[in-house]
Structures are given as C-alpha cells and as structure tokens.
Amino acid sequence: RHYSIAVIPGDGIGPEVINESLKVLKTLEELHGGIRFSYEYFDWNCQYYLQNGRMMPKDGLEQLKNHDVILFGAVGDPSVPDHISVWELILPIRKGFQQYVNLRPIRLLRGIDSPLRYKDHDDLDFIVVRENTEGEYSDMGGRLHAGTPFEMAIQNNVITRQGSERILQYAYSLAERRKKKHLTVATKSNAINHTMTFWDEVVNEVRKDYPHIQTQLYHIDALAAYFVMKPESLDVVLGSNLFGDILTDLGAAIVGGLGLAPSGNINPEKQFPSMFEAIHGSAPDIAGKGIANPIAQIWSVSLMMDHLDLPELGKLVLDSIEDVLVEGIVRTPDLGGSCTTKEMGDAIVAQMKKS
Ligand code: NAI
Ligand code: MG
Picture 1: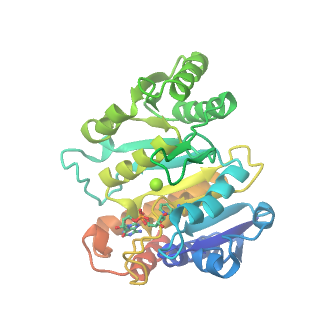
Picture 2: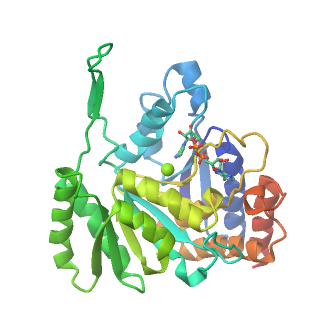
Picture 3: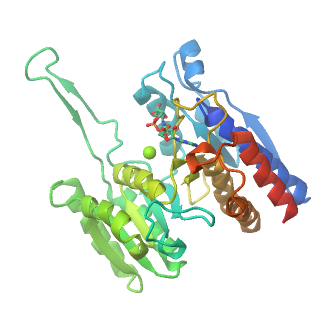
C-alpha cells in the first residue's frame, strides 16, 4: 500500500526533529516491503512569511488536502509575532481540516524517571483529548478605545453543541477501549458562567449514553493539582482547547518533559488529512545546536501509524524508543545526557532494525 505524506518542517528545532522522523519512516518502509511512503515538502515557516507576507500560500489547504497525513515540525521564530505564525499556519490547518481531536498521550516511558519520584510507570499512563477547533482559540473579539484610559481587548470563547458532542463522543469511544473505563472532564463552570455551564450541560446529556463509563467533571484548577498529586486516578481526560493545551504541557512535565510528548491532530472521519507533531514548539533557545530531543516527534510518527491502521508499525517505533531509553546510553541533554539529536535518531533506527 502507498501513503502520501505532506511534510512541514517549520522553524527552529522543527526541521531538526523532522529529519530524525523521516529516517524512522524510511526504516519502516525498508522493514515492511508492502508499504510505501511518498513525501511532499512544504517550506512554510517564518522565513517564508518574511519573504511572502503570509505563512502559507492562499491555496495552502488545497495543496495539503490530497495527502493521507501531514507530518508537522513546529513553527515560531523571534522575527515574527507568535500569534501570526500560529494563527496563519497551524490553526487554519487544524480548523480547516476539522482535526477536532488533539490526542496527547501522557505516559511514562520505560527507562524514564518521573520528576514525581514516588510514582511508578503504571501510575502515569493516561491520555488527554483536547478539543482542537473552537473554544478559547476563537478569532472573535477585538480592541476598543485605543489611546484612551478605557482601552480594552475582548476575545470570545465559542462552545457549540455540535463541537462539544463530537469531542465527547470521541473521548467516550476511547475510554471504552481502555482498561479503567473512566472519563475526567475539565470545566470551570463556577466562574465562566455562560460557556462552561453549557459545556457541563452537554457533558451531562452525552454521559447518559455511556452509563458503563465513569464520568467525572473537575474544575481545571483542581484537575491541574490532580495531575501532580494523583495521576494514577486518570484514564481519559477531556479538555477544551485552552485547558487541554495547558494540561498537556503539565502532563509532559510529569513524564519527563516536552522532549518526550507527542500529539495527533485527528479528523476521525478521515474526510481530511490528520496531522502529527510533537507538542513542543520551535525552542529558539536550543535551535541550531543539534541537541533537541527527537523522541516527541518520532513518537508522533508512531501515532501516525496507528491512525493509518498500521498499529504493528506504531508499536515497533514506540517499543524501539523505549528499548533505547532502557539501555540508557544515548540520551539528549534534556534527559541528562550529552548526545545529539542525530545520535538519538540513529539509535532508535538501529534498534528498530534489531527488533
Ligand atoms: P517550546 O516548546 O518551544 O520550548 C519550551 C522549552 O522546552 C524550551 O526551554 C525548549 O528548549 C524546551 N524544549 C522544547 N522541545 C524540546 C525538545 N524536543 N528537546 C529538548 N528541549 C525541548 O515553547 P516556547 O518556548 O513557549 O515557544 C517557542 C516558539 O514555539 C514560539 O514561537 C511559540 O509560539 C512556538 N510554539 C509552536 C507550537 C507549534 O508549532 N505547534 C507549539 C508551542 C509553541
Ligand atoms: Mg502547548
């Protein structure tokens, strides 16, 4: 079978970790004769913006549309305001392709110690589902009374019935396939009294269809504390766009840091391509040094394989990452080692070939 992959390396460490992911994809192809990947590269990043005045061409989504999946590095460079690089590239892809599920596993890999030292591997294995098309990341709003003492900015939070129902149904279907059969939903309806009360209402309606799943609503602040104090109680966690974003950087921190945290932006109906990326950004502080940890991006390739209904390939990638970590010799600086991005990628590829 043949799969076409759109590759957007982006800025900073994006291209560095994408390089290692491409080696992994090529190795998968070598090891499994029946599968072919083809690649189309897109140079859409902050450099492109400085030359063309936009982050991607007008027909950018058209160009991506016919690929099976998108492999995305990261965008963002100090030369372009972050709200431009994010709003003109990553958000249009997520929203335009109805990638309404942002799937972010929080799992302590074998060979990694959690900074929560009293927790072991079984305690740290859950998955965050982040709503990825609406919520707090809405463009509705604006600024008023510039230059006066009454200057203000307003940004609306958009919660729709359809958007909430579909993400809940996805979260439940995921919970049904897991051992604990447990869904924790983030809210803040005590203080955000229009949108979040509506969100709670939809949760309480949809949960009736899933009586065999234990559902709990927690205020986001309390839930943040649970991530640290009792992560073993979590199974599937659902959050709105902003809450899910913040919770998953915290989630990454408790399982070893941003260098280890993958994600999939998924259109479950497969009507449009889904997109796979590390949850970290372009990390300008370490870009160009060749020391970024490529594991988050390589694990995202594993999620991509699962999405393409090639779970045995996804498992091979993730097992190989863990085997290299257990060996403990090759580690990037964020994991306390001194190896390079390339050495880490090479070690994972070598392990894949051994398995
Ligand atoms: P960041 O995730 O790029 O970096 C935060 C910290 O984590 C930095 O100290 C960085 O060195 C470290 N880090 C991140 N990934 C790492 C890796 N693979 N290996 C080792 N260390 C790693 O977040 P920050 O600094 O808030 O944002 C930097 C730029 O990235 C901004 O322009 C921001 O808008 C953009 N960004 C883009 C995202 C995307 O493309 N989806 C997501 C988040 C941020
Ligand atoms: Mg984030």
